Length: 427
Image: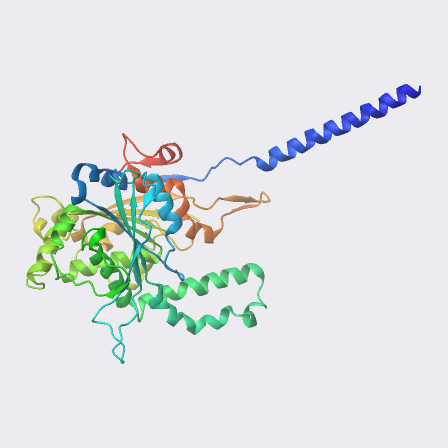
């Protein structure tokens, strides 16, 4: 009987320890299990090329061809270097795993904006990074514009509202939302008000430096104005490829800058000979802008429509009546928006026709994509974090895949082919 009790005790201990191990294993498996990613991704529009095809041209054309990307941030305060996570993912996706050790930085200036004491008004800064393949046969120049210093001083008017004196009475979620609004909405108001021309000039100066030449031409640590009439930028424009990555308000700013260009530099006798050569070179070029969390329809409420709309066929089809009056060969607009982003909007084809200047020959692709996960709330409703839905674009691998490989029937990034649906549009 004694032996039976001992075996019973030992058996119980063994079973308990075994069950404990099994329970631990099951618990760990549950905790480590990743739910299936059901975030939707729907692409609507014609086929287009990504950055990869341009980078690979460097092998064929050598130093005479460089791929250049300008990033323009949106609402909220940004510090130089903000593009680092996106840059890293983009460069690795392109196979550019080497880079120049130091970036080059230019403090942007304009002789047209000076304070009463004669000093230049703040226009932000432009950092330039050089990414290379291990064998240095592929190259990408990445231009990061930081225009936040233009609006930061004005935002000090409401900075008191984020102090403990005022925030300690707010509920936690409301406190977070109010802080988000205080940091973002003022940029929209300032841009539509007193500093619009300053911010547009900041983008224009960044574009000018992109058109200047290759890495060796750029100086570091200078405060300088880029004069479009100095030097011969037309050859650079013809040789290089130019892409824009914009976020939020940055999409509107960049579009406004293009509209400004088309309005001011296509009139007879409005520019010097060197600028005319620059315009002639741009007229033959195709540009692509990837708009993350774009706000074009929202901010159009504060604008008059461009001078020329609804006439894309007259300006952009070879042999058409105004074909020689176009500003550029084509502007691919790839508009990304999360349906749960409260500050982003789809860009309908009719909007492009009626509210985007026909002279830039716009071709619009819409990407409706959940960057924020939609979660079930106790089986009662669904919820997606609106802050994540507005700010999470830069790190989404599907977006990186679309930007690098583009969208084609005969080839696109594997993650895009597997997790995105494409509806090709035709005229």
